[in-house]
Structures are given as C-alpha cells and as structure tokens.
Amino acid sequence: MKNLTIMYMRFWPERHGGVEEHLWRFASRAAEHVNVEVLTENRGDNAQTESPIPNLTIHRFKSNLPIIWRWPYLARLRMWMKHLSAHKPKGWIWTIEPTATLAAILCGYGDRVIYNPPSCLGTMHKVWEHQQHIETMKISGLLRWFDQMAFTRAAKVVVASRSLGKQYTLCYGVRDNVHVVPRGADTELIQEMPDKKKSRKALGIDEHAFVIGFVGRLDPCKDIPHLINACGCPSVLRPQDRVLIVGEGPDKMRIQGTIRSNGLSDRVIMAGSLHDEKLREAYAAMDVFVLPSVYEGYGMVILEAMAAGLPVIGRPGDWKTSFTSMPEMIQHHVTGMLMHEHDPEDLAEKLRWMSCRPERRMSMGRRGRAQLAERTWEMVVEDYLNLLDDDENHLIQNAA
Image (tube, rainbow, N blue to C red; front, side, top):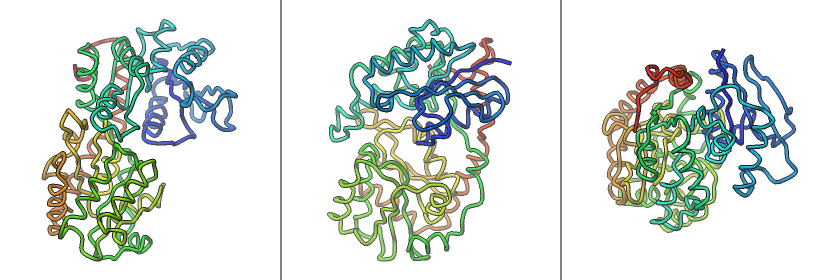
C-alpha cells in the first residue's frame, strides 16, 4: 500500500470546524486504500499514538506552551520540523496550512508535499486593506510569505474551487500542478431532515413564517450586517417572519447593533452555536439560506444548506474588495441567487421574491439537493488519491 502523512494542528476527536471535518472524512476514507499517518497537536488527554481505524495512525505531540495556533510563526515552524524528524514520512505529505508545508519543504520533502489550503492568505489581506474593520482578514507579512513559499514550492497544490486557484495565481503567480477538486456531500449530510413544524416550534417560530437563515462563525468577513440591513428594507419581513442566525464569534456586538438600528430586535433570533441534531433542526426551520461573506475560499456551509433542501443566496465577489467561490456553487435562478455586491436593496428584492414564491424556492432547494447528491465524498477521495500517483496521466484537471 502507498503511504500518506497528513499534517494539521487539529484532528479527530477535535471537530473545531469545516477544515477538521474535511480532514477526518478524507483520512478515514483514504485509509481504506493507503496507510495514513497524522501528525497533530494533543490539546487534551488523548493518547500520544492512536489508531482509531485500520491503516490510520495518529501521532500527537504535547507542549507546555499555549496551543500551537497562538505560537509565534517561527516557533511553529521549528515545532513542525522537530515533529517531522521524529516521524519521518514514508510517502506523500498532505498539508493544510503554510507553516507545516514550509517545514516539510525545509526538511527536504518538497518533492512530495501536496498543499491543500482552505484560503489564500494574500487575498484575505487584500480584503482587510479595503475594509479594515475586518481584523480577522489582516495577515502578517511573514505568514503571507510562508503561504507564498508553500504555494510556489510544494510539489502539487489542490484547491476546492477555481476561484481559490485564481486567487493564488493573482497573488503569487502562475505555476504547474495546481488541481481543482470540489468538495462533496457525505451520505450523513444528505439525509431526511427533521420535521419543519416541530423544528419551528422548538425555536419559537410561527409555522407560517418566512424564515431567512445564516449559519457560521460571526466573523466580520461574513458581513452579516449586510443581511440585516436588507431585512430592514420595506416589505421584506412581515410581523411573523424571522431571521435565524446560528453561530458565535467576534462580530456579535456589531450585528446586535445593526439589528437594533433597523428595529428588528423582535424578528431576529440569535441562536448561538448549535451542533448535530439542534443544527439540523435549525436548517429545517429555514426557508432560504443567505451567505453574505466578502471572503470564502469554498464555503462548506453552502453544501450543508443545499443538503437541507434550501435555496442559497450568496455574494459573487467583485475581485477588488471581496473574493468568493459562490458563482461556482450557486446556479443563479436554478439552485439559488447571486446578490449585488454592495446594495442591500438588491438582496432585499431577492428575499421578497423568495417570500412570495414558495413553490419556486422549494424547487430551487430540491435542485440543489439533487445536484449535491451527485458529488459524493467517495468521488472526492478518489480524486485526492489520484494525486498520490506519480503518473501524470492520472492527475485531475489542472487549474493553472
């Protein structure tokens, strides 16, 4: 069997977010075909070495210092190099973030590193340069340099969208061996949803309401105030209608201020962070999903919304102040709609359209769910495993 080493700060049983879920799905399915070793941090009381399933071994390191993402970047780099020295990779190395990638390159493994970044740090910084209230998009020059070295010097780069590949090309130049592998839907994602009426009752929502939903981290880059301003436009929300916001994060106070300034305190539900069945109930209660982000490398939450049978309204990105992959994921007037970049009234008009046409919006949701079911995680893993083959004839589409 071939060998694959995965390097990332968080891994099973930690399920911090979409990247960790993505890695677990990849690693657990890849282990059916190759020997997988994972190098990661031990944040809890987990075993130093563990094999939760056949052909998958996790090597965890523990430190007396704060958790790794709070370390200075050069300290992180040295830590990864030390970890690579203790557990020498036998085959391809799959990395997610630039510090681990650069460590593998400096340790002499550059010719077998596959860099799989969820976002382009150079582009994120461009967003901050235009909208400096989005502090989470401000990236240090050193980390952007790490990202550039990882992109230009890794043997192969795999991105989840053409948009992300284009972002890297614009920031760091053209290179060979850049491959687009869109994400997929797991069978556990495409399943029967909870009852809408019961889900709404649990959330205190009228069964006849029109419910606009958002799920994700309350980060300034998600630009949830844009959604709230649109909902504050005339004739968007009736008294019984609701905006359901699921998540926590640093932009919560600004969002609450926007809600108050629009007079929507009685129509917006801030549900906090929800998981598992509670999250599925929240999706079941919604009629339309809106993602107003100014930056998305891919947007796994769009897949979740489509799996719930919801039409999705998203921001396409203007490639100056905002960068997203949503035009690749949302078919305008087929599975959802693409909003105007800067005009809340445009989003308001699309929400009015959705509210007045229940059959059309449900049809969009069904189409999105059907399309999503055609792209399974087994297909994604097969494409990933093809990247481990040295024969270039087996490589997937080059996105350069």
